[in-house]
Length: 323
Image (cartoon, rainbow, N blue to C red; front, side, top):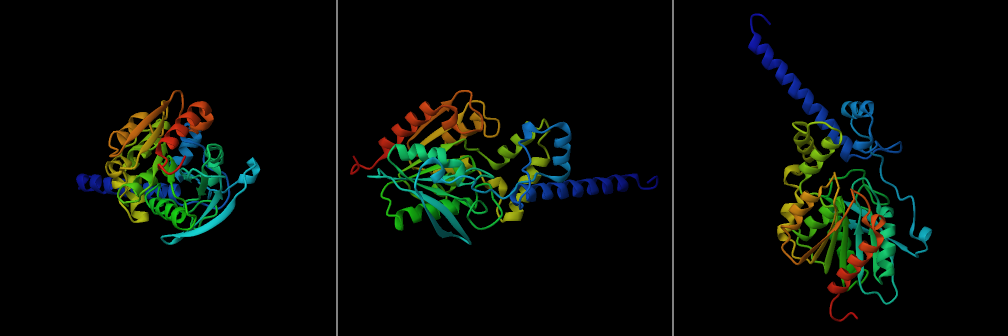
């Protein structure tokens, strides 16, 4: 060290950089590869100092999402459907309506499943719409055990809408996506060229990097350089560029009429970041802000506002041949 101090410093720097990349690789894998059973790591803001240290060392634990409730638990009849998407098989519940106005295809958020959206499906059904609740790849009854935070899931959106149109004979198809489901829907309707009669998105993030940075902020930790490294290695593990997975860019190609619902105090997909998506939407658009709402179900936060807003949007978007 005395003879070659600069070489030693460079070697130490390289070793530290390699170690940091190794940790980032492990964390990216933990966030995108579901495990069997066990307890899910609490949300960042709920972790104790010791818990935060443990997460920094070993990464999060995300059990494979399961459907813990079913439509009949809330008094709705359903049938189970399976259909292909890329190299996965997706599973979904179909909840039919009487003289249906159309069909809403529902997509859940990160580390969730279709059962999370049963309250929204009940509300859509009450409005007279059939519902197709879809498990993304890796969740619930669908195959796989990984997630790409909305990138590959965009193919699932395309497959589900095609199934609704071609196999279920849905004339008017509306898409409802929450958080990751919103990101996947925007990519499907933008770069992938999907067409739908209307889009409702809740709590969309603007960039994958932004939403990862927000997790560090919730833990009270600086996001650089770990957040960019997580995005980089997550993309490498799943075969895409995480830095290009940006709903705010996808929005430029989305001409579908869109209703965006945002939470005023959302710390995971902030209002400002959601507005960055909204401002770039290419088609007709409307925005509703839920005061006091974080990254949560807006239907549960303010049922009257949600039902009124969503109902008015859907009625406006119905094709002329529907009453």
